[in-house]
Image 1 (tube, rainbow, N blue to C red):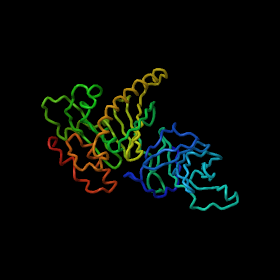
Image 2: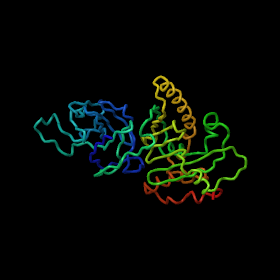
Image 3: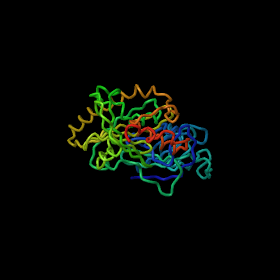
Image 4: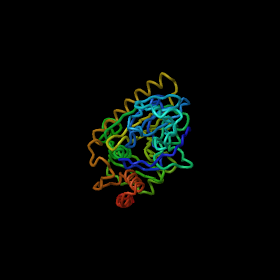
Length: 353
């Protein structure tokens, strides 16, 4: 893992985001040596690489007169402003002001706010929070570390990141939203889910059945059923998700908050098909299938109200919502937003005691 550590200044953001965490913001292949101006986490940023391939990022606005640094260019491992030629190094420090001459001292206040980045697992991750003497590891699923091939599809939807994430933690919508794809068979009865949650994330074990009037399994029985088995789906804070399709096939999503109105999805298919032509065809077919299934969700979550689930104080939960409840609880606790115990799994667990 390549990690570049700079002192990140305190930033104001229009978004409510968990702090002191790594956020995936780009796939590695999206960033070249040309400055890339994008919006992430409610901020306009510019990303670029030095000759050694290391990624760098800073606020896109030049501190001089506000020009967009993404319209500039790279020379001698420096980002050059297109307006007056100010030069910034990878730490965001301004190292040359042409109008002042080569021998002049550059004021420290001319530095641009920079970000700590790490590049690993085919993503560029941005540290959102205070500078650390030692940064924690990037949150990733250990099962995907080695031996896999993957293919990525990217979509960006006008939805808040909370709704995007909760949709993928929802285990009861399949027979209604995906009736002709992954929800065929009318399996509307949700046994569980059995959910484990901690500071790292949420793990969910669930089985859906057709409703024949059968009773729900007790929580102890659900725990016994889950023991020793890989979770049906897992989520790691702040925004990576894994669906366990089989031992050789996984779906992965990195949810990237762009702003309060938009979320970028990096949807990956992980597989073990290594014969090149077969792998390419398999990725093509499965990628289109995954996009089709994901788009079935779009028509629903685009119309959910309120758009930010942190504001959804009137939602009424059912037992199948355990994972969503845990997500909101953790998020509100991290953001210090009111009473996080208002809706608990125990309060709603009427039929699964």
